[in-house]
Structure formats: C-alpha cells, structure tokens
Length: 135
Image (tube, rainbow, N blue to C red; front, top):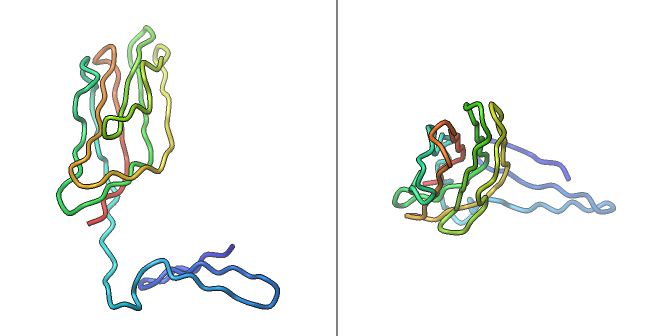
C-alpha cells in the first residue's frame, strides 16, 4: 500500500496485478470541503485525587481523536492512575513506579460533548493527553 498526499486530496493506492485501485478518503468529488484538523494538547497537568474528574470535553461541532497519553509519577513512591473515555474505562488503578512514567498509544474518537475523565492516587501524577480536533 502506498500513500499519496497532496493539499487537496489523499488517495490510497493499491496495486493488484496490472490494475490500480484508487480510494478517495475525502468527499471532494461531491463538492464538500475538508474539515480543519488541529493537533493539540487535550489535557496537561497534575491529576486530582478524584478519579472521575473531567479532564477534557469535546467542543461543539467538533470530533476529537485521542492519540497519546503520557502519565508521569514525580514522587518517590509508586502511585496509581485511572482514565476513562466517555465513561468507559481504559485504565483502572494502573500503577506507575516511583519517578517513572508510562505511555498509552491509541486512536480513539470522541464525538461532540464527550469527555475524558481521570485521576490518580496523588497529585504528584501528571497527565499529558494529546490528540486532534476535527471541526
């Protein structure tokens, strides 16, 4: 599979024998415009000790894609963290060693008004949640 990128269109090019198959990934032929995609930090900061704290809410007329989460423990003892996407747990009381970090790589979409919730056993745990917003 080869990827062709241009400012106006992205096509996936697959070769099978002597035939080429083009799959349009964006509905440009129907006259629709591409939606703006903005990479951003969805949350950066110290966790609270309430594991259901809302860390991020998807703005109106927007879809978010959560791509990476880094959890760092800056204390001298092991701590735990909990995270959920729209109320569905993705990490429940996961331990992070003293002065250590862990990362989660994912590609999960959240629709308008959906949330990321989380917290930790101590405020020495910091969360860095990255993704993109499509509006």
